[in-house]
Image (tube, rainbow, N blue to C red):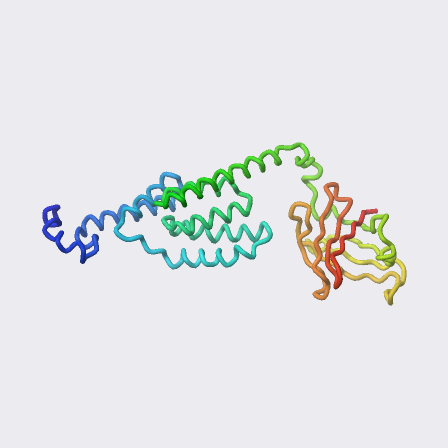
Length: 289
């Protein structure tokens, strides 16, 4: 057994050997405690478990290595984060950083990146929790100040989001909450008035929306012959697979078509197409008849 006296005997070589070699029993005990704390965190995800992991890691002679699997998820999240645009994109980024934190809860960089991803996804409460955990690390005073200020900013955003959500104007009526793709089926015509000089043929066709194979198919129907398109001609134009808020999620039926953003009104009786042709951005509104 290595005693405190024996440790003092070899103290003269402290400048040449790691602290873990001077008192191996103490080092092993610290490592065992750390491993237990990590296991507890991975099982409970509690604030107490987070605090224990970070305290144990800080007390070890060297920072624990980051597992390769944790680094893989961190790198994947970092690669996807700058390109994220939709809620689904941010959910994937958050998932990658969450896995990195789960595998290496003592890793500060993974913790801060998770907080930023959560903020971008709109989950301010979880972002605040992770920044509070980040404050448990031994941070330089200026960095700790900046992190605390960031928490105040997130609290303000969280309060604003709660007010908006509670506002009567943003409360969906029961009949609206139940609407889905199938409720958009029907015939859609260009809303008047519009610039007939710029769009002289928009009254010669309309769109028919119908459900098929679980998707909403938007079909362009020619009502009067023009530019070589015969009356009665039908062409599938857009395939929608879902709704995100009031925006249709899908893609043009033909690869050559321009990307288009389709936004649906709250009562599902109007939609607006926004796209870009070779010259400019264009927005058109259609109503169901």
